[in-house]
Image (cartoon, rainbow, N blue to C red):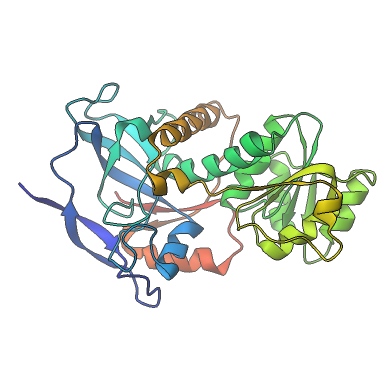
Length: 336
């Protein structure tokens, strides 16, 4: 028997065409290892807008439902699923890269290995907003950069979705944290999250500040969350043997070959790679990262800022808000 659901659909890769709320097929019946989740909230990320403009990684040019993360209640389970039952509150990072599988919808079909139980004291909106940015920040600063105690770490775009989680993870590791932000208001925000030095980039030069802040030694690690031009400029702020992680695609060296001469380690993080490649082992590992993040959030050791919540049918307005910049934390869609 076929089933359907309401979802926000993007036609092909023409972002000038608005998303439409319409009925689409719901995958049914479930696979033996799959779980049907009735969604209550979905996180909004720059990746969603990227796929609208350039096409999803899977099924390019075809209609698709955006959204890589969500939270809701278990509605049904496959025959081989253990550990989850009807009514459980869960969250996940899955879908949104092609086909009709994203989280901007009433339901999501998710492999059980990618589901994470939602703590009772965490809202659906928070649970939906955390997975993608947490995985990104964790893979960047902990798994790639290996940030440790007393190291000097810079996070670009520290008030944004990924940035405001990244600065907290670095602080939890005992690092000394700096962050670039776009205003004094966002400077106050990141300081409230444990940032030692907020750099307001329209006013201050982050390279000069970083060198002064580190006593001329330079940074041990940095996260580029802005773009390749910023990444290249960051090389001058690094200590020899420092680690630079970028979310924006790797870039070449500067004209002085600074990265080469300082022997910098350059890491590229694209946390959706396991989903694109169907790497179940890595996807299960990422779910473990989300599980850790939920515990930190539940215990108050990690804070997640919600910039604004939009109804599902206003996903277009949510994307406009994201594109305008200046957000603090995450934008979320409510699917109640």
